[in-house]
Length: 276
Image 1 (spheres, rainbow, N blue to C red):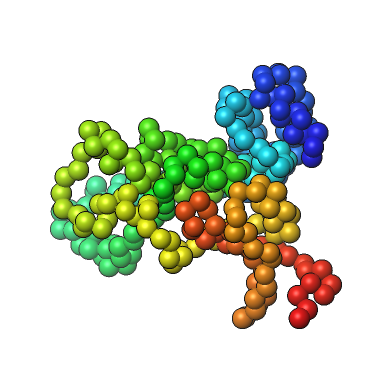
Image 2: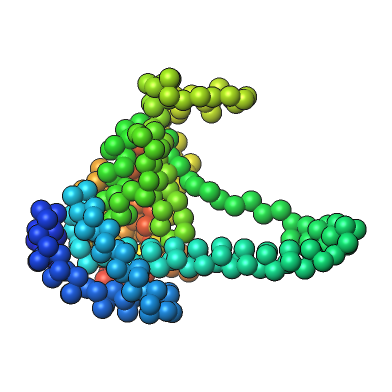
C-alpha cells in the first residue's frame, strides 16, 4: 500500500515512531502467517522479531519499490523455510550421532561390515551448494536481484562474490572481472581448463539462453504486476499459457546478463484472455 511505502520512507530516515507503527500493524499477522510452516509460536515470534530487527538495522540499505506488505510476507516465508531446513539438517546429525553411538560398541569387523552395508543401502548423494552467475556488471546484477527477490544480500565477499539465501536455496553472483582486475588478491593453484578459468571471457560472452531460473508465486497476476512495476528488464513478456498434461501459466524476463527468468504460479485467466 502507498501508506506503507511512506512509512518505510520515514523508517529509512531513522524515524522510530514510524518503525513502531509498522511493527504494530504487521507483527501479529506475520506471526500467524509463519505458523503455516513453523508450528511453534515461540519460534515464529523469533522469526518475525528477527525480521524487524534486520529491517531497522539495515534500513538505509533496503530498497522496497512496490509493496512493503509483499516484502514482509515474502521475507517471513523465506525465513520460516530456512528454519525448517536448518532443523532438518540438525535432525540428520542427531540420527547420524545415534547410529555412530551404536557402532562405538561394535568390534572393528562389525563396524566395517556395518559401514559397507550402509553405503550399499544409501549410495552416494551429492548436495547442491549454490547456483552462481558469472556476471559482467556486478553492482547492476546485485541491484536487479535485490529488487526481483525483495530481499537484501545475505553475504558479499569484497566485490568478488555475493549471495542471496532464501527457502533453503542459494543464488550467487560472481564478478567476472574481479580476478583479472585484482591479480594480487586471488591465488590460483591446481589444474583447470582455460575456458573455465577465464571468467572475464565468460562474463562478456553472448548468452545462449541454455539456462533458466524458474520461480513460483502464489498469485501470478499480482506478481506480474509487481515485476512490471519494478521496470528492471527490457525483456518482460506478458503472461503466457501452455498445456501439455495440465495448464501452465508463466511470464519471463531477463536479467542484466540476458539469463532467462521464468515465473509461474496460480492464475485464473480473464474471460477471452487466451482466445485466438
